[in-house]
Image (cartoon, rainbow, N blue to C red; front, side, top):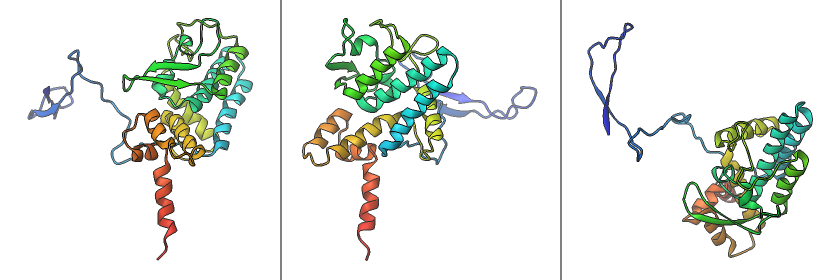
Length: 249
């Protein structure tokens, strides 16, 4: 759809020397204009990075633990506990944040409140079904949250609730992570993708002697090329720097 955009309007609201400036407006399936607002600035990279130092990951977790201890009101402690569980869980499952926030108790727990072995979800971005597993740290993060804050388990309820009752929004998680990163002294850009990128990075480092691992990781990440996976995990830039420094002519 193409619509004219008015310009040259004076202070009393009348148009002066009106010249239509045509601009293409993208429409959604229901016929309404797409919302394309963005906080990206022209010429400024918006990429966020994985947390490669495990000590920084532990510092981030400790930031939320300290927040639980420092806030006064029970509802504030519960929110900080939710954030700790969310971040700790996220570092261990390799999911997009848009999928994590939509998880319900019934996605990860059986009716007897024990953890499921294999968990299957439909990814929001790709619409594909994905199966993943919970390691000990992921289970511990959720169980500690349940026990410490007496979380009622309704299998149809969201795990990571907002104050309004739905699930916490991705943009809210982004702000929470950025505040935590600043507080612990991380200087590089951090966002919700940093959680998944960190998982990918540490998977590569842990399995670097496994000849078959990268093929599996590409499948787990839904990437079509090895270079995409290496770039996503922050490995390609690291290696490029090493290559430049290896040869001095």
